[in-house]
Length: 228
Image (cartoon, rainbow, N blue to C red):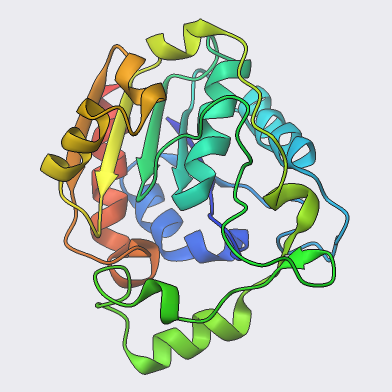
């Protein structure tokens, strides 16, 4: 199966290298997506630009691909299911949840000079970063790409309720499946509350398992794709 891989904020497509290699060995074709504004030098990219790039990857994939979103990009994966419910075979959401209609995509931190830079490790202390040593933290921070304002503050637009028919697997890194279920049941994740086919898998990592547990993450994704 083709597996479309979408990295979260501040990351470019290269972060999937180890995961992609393992997916290939497991018989799948990884398709890491290079998002506008996250690695191509563009500072004027918008959320619509990123959605269009993801949809192009879905449209060019063989069959019905699985679309994988990490962190904030779980919303990009969900937007792909909304725009192409008949083309997306499954969604895998790693360490995040889809945003609701009418909400900003990722206005989490201060915008400076037209972009949202990586805020440092302070906001991510605790379970998010507990498995990252100092060398890994420095490497991630030094490679972090400021997210264009037009992406971070772009508004999520959802239009097709057939998105709720697309099967979803929630990969739980810094939180547990039990916690994820509780948040959904409490109404904190309305999109997944309405999804008809949601399963949960656990991975013992922080928020960035593509760096710390790439082989294990790839095996979880391959298993989800095999089920699809």
